[in-house]
Length: 195
Image (cartoon, rainbow, N blue to C red; front, side, top):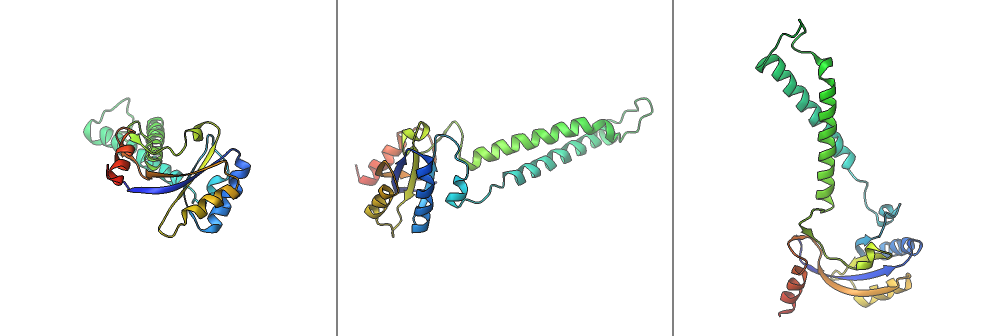
């Protein structure tokens, strides 16, 4: 969790305007908190300077864990815990275990990657985050720039307007996530103002 911060928020109506704006904001040295879009915009992660995801590496680790779990458990059951002689077949019958091993590998990988993705993106039914603009889920592209001690707020506002933003405003919000209801952000904002 993080504290309450101030953001300069700009709304754009076209991704063709958003891309150069993101690049110019980065060149100017401002800290982009995030960019919210109504649909996936290819190449935006590179324009924002985000590193490539490690989700495929996590998926490989989960898959190896599933394979190891399946082979370990099946071999323990059929060789130590409950060895059965079925038609003279060996107790360690690896070819017969391949379907179950494959299914457990896929299960561990799929479930692990979904849970990891949800954790990294802070997605869950009970997790709440501040919405900078309700139109970010409809037809606008919203860029939130975090105001630091060195940031000149009016300078950032005029910079975004020159970059093609339709609407620029300043919002105070909790930058992290919390568990609970959306009215918590209003409560925290009132506490900060001393109400």
